[in-house]
Length: 494
Image 1 (tube, one colour):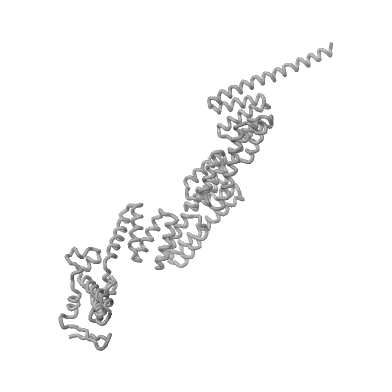
Image 2 (image 1 turned 45 degrees about the vertical axis):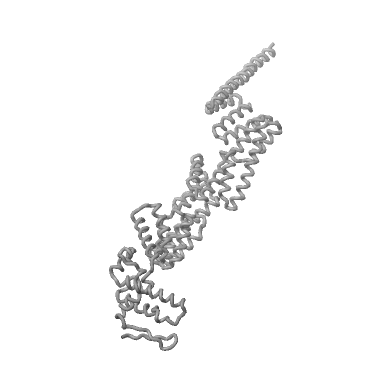
């Protein structure tokens, strides 16, 4: 009897425990059903809470983990979802949906190789599963995009890398690695706002992400905000001391900043030769830094203009605007060099570009001046015809006319060929025109200001150069050429 009672006691103690397990299962199923209801209504946070309650009641039920994984995926929490999906297949390796969700999480996080393994296992369990077949293809597509992107990055075909990453991110939306690569290439393409946006999104989720810090720094570096860029590179290196790209970029940024500042200092001190050398050295540091290099070219162009190497200055400014076609300072510097070298059409073109961008009174006046010089350049250059400077005195103009008129007088070339005679007659007439204008203060002023001389009622094609010549040399009989043998002449004044 004692033994039987003891057994009853034992039995009595065991039965409530079995009832508790059944009750727990029923309660867990109730939580799961409520979770399903919230999931159907797309209230994923509440669904997550009820699936968690179900797991707490029955922690060895694979489907509960699978359901919670699905909920976390809908919330975009793929890393947490991966943990639940993996737990579900550890509890039940034949759970097809668990393998599909594990693969989907791997793929969303950018681990296409692991995703392929999960989808392959799902297909082993159900070879006709259409979802597994499609997802397996998707994972392989991502692997191919990765392969192409890696090759194109080495070729510096950054546009194609961005294209590949965009396609890959359609299947792997939570992959930080793909996003970082895309952002880095966007920065290399000069699309800085887009690159910064991608990096900033990652940093909002993970402020210690060294790759995102590097890309933020890279954007600032390429926008010529070098000091701020260095701060981001240094922060990235704190998070990942072996980050090679951040290390190289930080070194380049510091070197560029130092060389540029040294060049600016030498320029201010008037040491143009040293400034030229320092700017040239700076240009060799990083050919990818477009904006900084544009400024360095423009600075070196300014140095060359100071050294009166105007063709070199124009070339430097041209290189600057090739790198940055919005760089107003480079256009202005080149335009001034064009003015100094009397290339007025080119100067007008540059000033028009500047004025279209920044409609200031100063730029309008610069354009007006260039247009005036262009107009003047298309007329005959009477100073050049006489061989005198634009600031020549009245006496210098007279002496120049005397010399050139005698040199080109038709009588002096009477024994030459018809072609030579015609050319010398033309030059003689131009010399007379030049003297007529430059010896008359009123006409000279109008000519110098670019005004049309015809407005004065003077048609330059109708005057007689011989009359000018006779008047200058004292009228009829005042001067004559006489030959003293073939090709020889002497001057006889009356």
